[in-house]
Image (cartoon, rainbow, N blue to C red):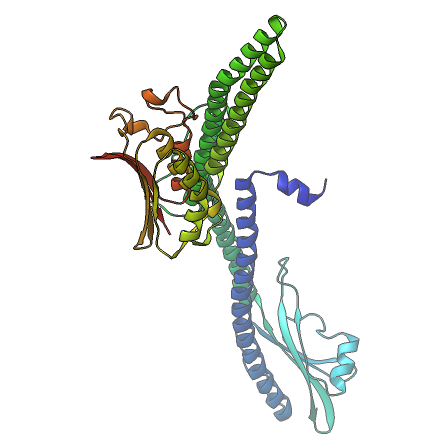
Length: 452
């Protein structure tokens, strides 16, 4: 399996701990390497300074043919001729320090410095030597100065052990802290997952427990999920309401149509009787169409997040909507008065126009006397008020006037589905406004208040 695929299969906490461990390993390795390099450089510089000083003392002693001077603790020396014969040597040295190649290079004037033995693994008689050619009475001599590296190597080995121990403990502590931090950070995510699983199992009104005193990324995720749950529950409620409303209201016209057709088919009918039956069926079909359109409009309004707002000339919109209602008022001998300012508003004409039409239709259908539509724009708000001179709303009906299929008792046998004011309320809510009904001293009034 591809290592990357294997890594992706690991839990998030494990991946986070691995990332912390790898990162800390790189950081600790770099820091330990820097510390080791600085200490090693300082120790080597001190060792080289001692070696150079001892080398100069040996050179002077060879020139003056004096005994070798005492050097640093653990210092050694050898004096060779160009053929490699040992002319003078420290008692502790039992072998020649230079190889044949190195001897030839120094004999030709090269100053040589090198280490004997290694830091790891531990070896005995570790040295740092420096070889240089000198001339004594016209004869070349090779002078070798050496100092022991035991203290320097021991200090570096101790430093390596301490750095390794400190790095291991730091890595363990960082991994543990990373694990605890990752678990604490992801604990709300697991809680959110459990809550979502509960919702998926059908538990109603499930919401995630989001702390109110925080505003980090996990908290914002919780608020987003709760908002999503609100939207899902609202959508499910709209679907249930739509199905219930449709089944409730469509049953009556369908039953009437079935009764009309059964009667027509029960025995032979004259052409006039069949025509009358078809007209009745046509009326019920039109009622079904109007009811379906109204329900679909309400569903679309309830599920839309944003309206297509644009600048609308209020006077032109109201006049276009009111034109067919003027003709209806004239046929019934009533007066329709409209007062609108010549101004523009920011609204969705696709929905605002039908809402105004529903207000006028309700006033002409259920009210009496003159109907008046007044529109005012003030402080960035549009206020539309439609009044009539009828008996008004029954007091017990006012609190539910904007509910779907709500109809006053006196109007239950009249035309209409009871969705007109519900549609007006949905348009107001979608625009961020409100709608309410009230009784005046001379009839009823329905007010639509929208931000514009």
